[in-house]
Length: 260
Image (tube, rainbow, N blue to C red; front, side, top):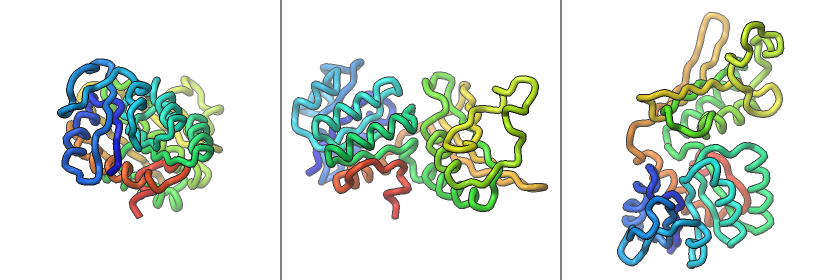
């Protein structure tokens, strides 16, 4: 039996994970964290606590984090230090953050699985975009989310840009340093080397969408993922990661690393 702590248990994905865990014979909810809902009984005999430190005082195996960008890194490091494996669904972490997490995970002999998006179709977006980038070097990303989203770009867009930057060829676009007017409107370069330009839109009516736009002379290719209003697409991927992380040492980024 894998004992799971959910940090962000009263959030959008966290609330969907609780009943999903109850249906799994090999998983059990061992702890739940939410400052806003602390003290509430989330399942019979288990109450939500205000901090991860409180949850870690009881036995568990895996911490699943769906919280906020300003606390997720501290949660991951605290969980690893306490001997727990971690599944990270919260966005907002960058390459330097992941390097620190990887180092601690290796030192502790524990596993961390982090994905900007645990949806199967969002994972396929990344898979197909990486295939296209081997043939089409000019690519930029448009990242759509609600007006209230705290971080930009989204974890999906950031993870995609970093992966694309590692495999794409040289862009034919004019270098940003040579752009007149307001160069910041060209977006932000994400990833190593030349990077990939990412443009983040934040406005009402969007949940989350991400598209990779590829261009060649006289033709374009757009690969896009759109999320609906339900958290259901993220549940299956998260549960897969909870099971897989038990056999991993170090950091795995992206659900695609678990699909084959």
